[in-house]
Length: 390
Length: 187
Ligand SMILES: Cc1ncc(COP(=O)(O)O)c(C=O)c1O
Ligand code: FES
Image (cartoon, rainbow over all chains, first blue to last red; front, side, top):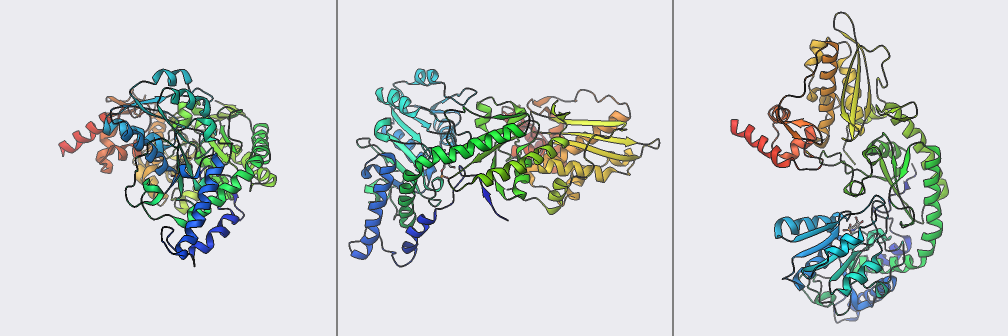
């Protein structure tokens, strides 16, 4: 069975060009990039090039790039560095729709370390309440961390505008740009951000490689203390293969950015409009305008997400549901709840996230599968009668 | 992905006895749209109190659908007295087991069945006895005590897996812990 992969916000296919770039470094070129010999420096040179390519994608200097083991490590390192830089400051600010890599860290810092955590709410479209955010800024604030784009809905926060206001007050600003990278332009120089996180596996590089950008002049306290790697900012012998792959992936991402915002966006809009047209009682979550070009979070009234996913799975279609159907809690995700998406559609929310590998034929197949799947599930649902919600 | 048995997958993909039963004379409903799953059970009971037909309508995940389907298959042909003895464990066993996190789906089946039996016998199910612990999912302390005893539950997470209590806003988790402790203290 052919796989139709529309779960690119979860992870992406490693690009063939990236694999090709990495292969030699799995094999013959196993040197340590820090070694003095030429053999090791063959790898060292490739890593310097990769660092340049990563920097180019976000308009940073190579010196401002720290390689980490994943987006989560980047997020955690950024926050801990800020707390170490300001041991006297007790307030930390984020939103209530962040990825667990930030949200659970902040809850830990609140519950176990006594920090005064401000979770800025969003409105029904997923937009941040900026007034509340700005009101919460205080002399006591160690850091503000806000995601650039939301992994579930694709809603984009106005990071450059926010970062300027926050940093003007002398408060550190970090953004989790894991989902934004490769999908919308990012320019750290323009955006006033002090720190920014990226993750390789969301942009067609392998899993287990991340980046933390730290602006020149911002004091950084390492999270992994060890050797001199990454200029002493992150100990541990480099994940050479993945770093080299990530460099290539960033180069490709920069080239493909225009495709994302034309071809991929058109496919996403096509899928969205087809589903809206062919299935009744359907709603799209999040602001339709300020949204990643590849993401569609769409709720189907009176049916449950996991059931839909299994019906899609039977056809080889990969997507995600909006409910964290784990640990017995059938509650819809914290993101949909924060946006006050009504239960009737929140439980039946599916996220399709596309990439440039998707085709129109695939979108047609998804629509062709979704229409009868929703019909079958609604025929079974006690909340659906005579073509509407009861 | 959940690890479902082939039986669960089969009963999800090909549910038995779906839809409204036109000549049903007993109906039991449980769950809600807010909860994320709900079951409406229809029974046709003859003059000897034997269940001659059963059907269901379910909103929920694959294991909720499969549990409902299994329940209708289990109880068809039983007398109401026999059906009243069916436990959520029987439903899970029929399906070759359910993931621990999904046990509440089988609990939902048992609850709808009890309500349908009460409906047939004209028994008004009273306001649930006991003290309300979880408002999100309307679960009382007595229900928690029963589930803890019957299934040997140890943690609040176990209770959430079985009854969903605590899986919503979470404000009741402290109280659930107290109830578990009180059962343990009793021995
Ligand atoms: C917004 C966001 N932040 C952080 C992460 C974590 O990245 P990683 O899986 O590399 O740790 C993800 C991916 O799941 C994400 O979507
Ligand atoms: S009251 Fe129990 S989860 Fe909300």
